[in-house]
Image (tube, rainbow, N blue to C red; front, side, top):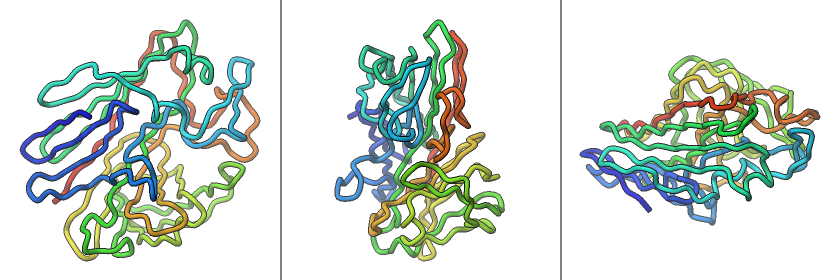
Length: 290
């Protein structure tokens, strides 16, 4: 584990998956990130790469061949190495290797950086194409925010707050993939949280105007904001059985296969195409509001 600390926050990051494991406010010791309790979920904030969600039947086609790849890809369980560490940031890297090439036929370098700026944890993603051809991928975040943040409260005391008014319908997830059917879900700037909302799996949106979504409470002022600009898809999730003490706020570039998708990886909606020797960069932030 590696730690980074300033006058406001302390974070912990694991080399496995370059996964953020803890965000702690130093003033009162409040923890804002779920602790990976396997009773509910064995992750805290995994990176989703080179796919987001599932490919249909666990298989996909690329470069004229068929490959098997599990949900959300392999980066979240891969061993990254620490590239650089200062008193302000940490940088981790993962490169394609014999194991990744068996399930994903492209050469790449993925870097994940963490920087503390006051009450903000900035996370940067950089994908470099080190192949001699175009590569195709999706990338996304899956952080589990404590919900409620205060142990004295309940999940149902909490709500999601969007920084722009929304009137949006979600794309349901089914056992066979993402459905084209839309279900009206958002109307305004707030969504009250109940476990029943997630009985059908994650809430997936492809048309949100907001680039900031906060976990807030009706009973306290503690909140956390996810800021992610220019992400075309957002997912929100907690386990379908109910009772888990977290909500995932997930900005994505890409999404699971549609039920009727039959093309190659390069044909998927939301897929990123990156030419040889080019680099894709984006970032998101966790902002502690109290």
